[in-house]
Image (tube, rainbow, N blue to C red; front, side):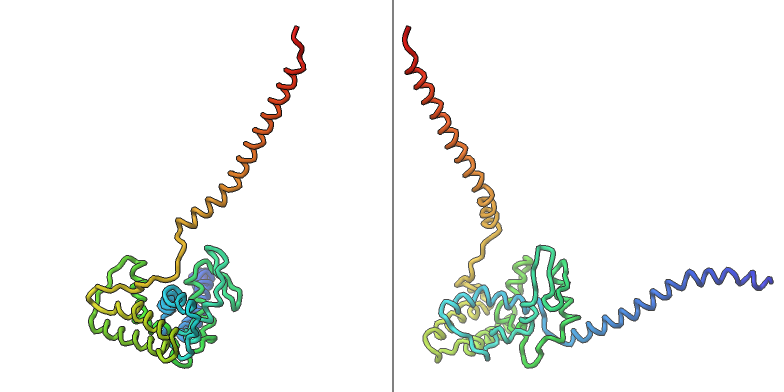
Length: 268
């Protein structure tokens, strides 16, 4: 009886610890499963952020000029959309609202783009076509991704002469592959444009800056705010004009009645 009384407090203690032990075991199992998926995703050595930056640079500082020349970039060119590893996933992003991003594959929603990126990496990495060299981030050196990314973060870029020479060589190689001068006047003009727009800035002298020929015109926040304010005030303006015209017509009619009344009155 004494031993039973001494051991009886152990039973409630075990009952209290059992849910905690069960939760720890489940968390460990689920964590191992998730880490396995992440491990598979990490086998793809291609930065999504830098690939997105490279794609945006192409769209802003090259595509407008290519479209103006009505030139078709050859498939062998590494700047071609088919050579972007993440292009299909990026096209399956649905930006519903400021705080809502939706997966185009499974329709799952997220409140930030980075969480959707993580979802792609862990759930839909098997949809990526990893055959061949298709990492657009590998061209970031030639396309000045660091210049764009660091500009948004207000940081300074230290110039390395060896790296600048390497990036210039890659840049010139892209110009020769994507816009061979033997393909006609349009290709020749774009070849020259690419050298001036991207390649000349690969130097440590600091004389040449990337994208000197400009790019796609972007509407700033100020112009957007002015447009919205104009659309809001325009109906109010027309309403005031309408009320003013109606008041003017009403005053004219009253004046006419007074004049008519005065004419009908006979002098005594």
